[in-house]
Image (cartoon, rainbow, N blue to C red; front, side):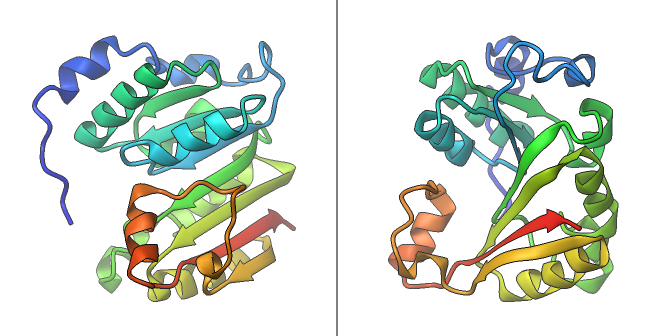
Length: 209
């Protein structure tokens, strides 16, 4: 579903205190001021997950990446209101990760309910397609993790194969993650709707081989 345009988002992003205006300037120095574990959410949408996780884990860093202007504007506003020192936003495309982060600089990558791009001709746009998995492998620490949640079975099956091809090792997998409570992991707004209807949530964790 295409998100409706938020008229004020563009102007808000220009002045948001939580937005990192030039992420490339931080490359190689993300942990100089704060050596805590660095979490990166790709395709963060309105930012609810990163905001919730940053509040839950105040000693760790959370950076949300979103390329949709309206969603990024909403996330920026949410982050500014939360006023958490360990939470920030990059308004940009996840395809540019290698421009923003040095090799092995990220500890955890989160992919939450990414666009499944169901048509085969659009498969290269999926966040688990080769153009992305290679960058994840590059910026992720040797002992880092990549965590994916989705409601889409086809995307999940595709991702299991693509991450294996890219040199990731599956550490944990669930085809109904929310059948049990997981207080350590925040529900996204999108996820909560599916949980309420009983739709299964697929989740997997990978590490670099």
